[in-house]
Image (cartoon, rainbow, N blue to C red):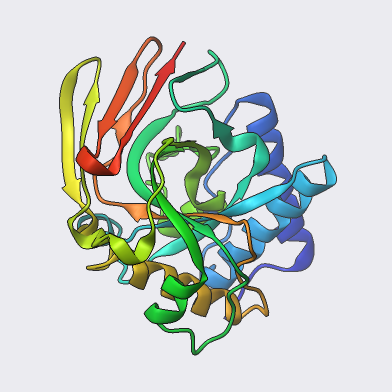
Length: 269
């Protein structure tokens, strides 16, 4: 059962907003509120989102995280998480991320879904996801952490509840410029070779995302249905990473080669 009251949730959301605005970090929410659960964490995320909307932010879609078994084992969970994409999170393919934009950015390779129609409901099937998708595209997600990865005083590690509260560590997205019809692509076999400064760091396949990114999308729609929400036409959805996160340092350039599926490139000042 949730343990945080409305004032505590609002305060945590405000702390995350200030951390993002000031490029600082806040303390572990899980340490401040022992016993908090996922409902608490998503409530904090919602408070953070409301604060960003109040400051003029515009929602552009969603991200799904923790879809790979490796990441789930690392955090001792067995389900993904989700967060919200805002318009100011989008960076151009081949563009540059300004210095100081993020705190501790990392990169993940993903397949993005761009929705053709609204999609909602707890009974949505993978076939429904395919029918509602306009196209898919290669993408890089930029992760960031507005909460310390480890408490500077106690050394306590950030938990999945902190990550969910922190908008699922969501911070940016770079869409490739190639698009594909979803019913003409086996997303399980879409792979990427991801290089940092021309050195290959990670490789992976779409099957690493819950066996099929379409299943990840169905999971998200089912989760949103629990809150009376759903996907909307035009939404961009990051379906989940199939590589481990790669640290993005000052001056780093990234190139993700998806073969026939396309490429994505971005540089950090």
